[in-house]
Length: 99
Image 1: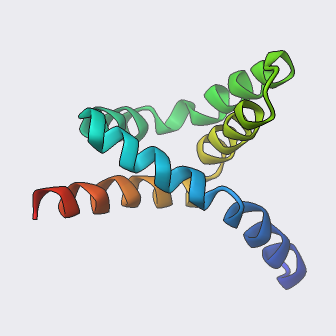
Image 2: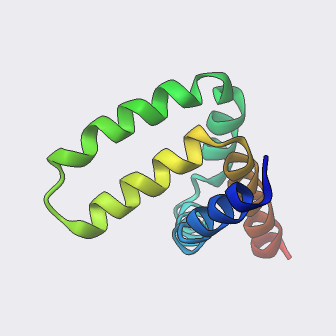
């Protein structure tokens, strides 16, 4: 990947990190972090398909915040690095809660 494309990629993905962190915290609070981790890790082969389905929902959502969350979910599902980052967030939040 050329440097300019890598920088652009990083800039786009960093916009969603705050959303993913909030999701990880919320999933831990509600007790769904392990289930989410299992689902994301076991169905990672289908994540591109899930991402496309998520992107199809975006035009039908009225709120700007909802559309941003849908884009963040799509980015999480379609990109392997983002996927791994979120799985690491889930693990990290789980360790913080247990300590």
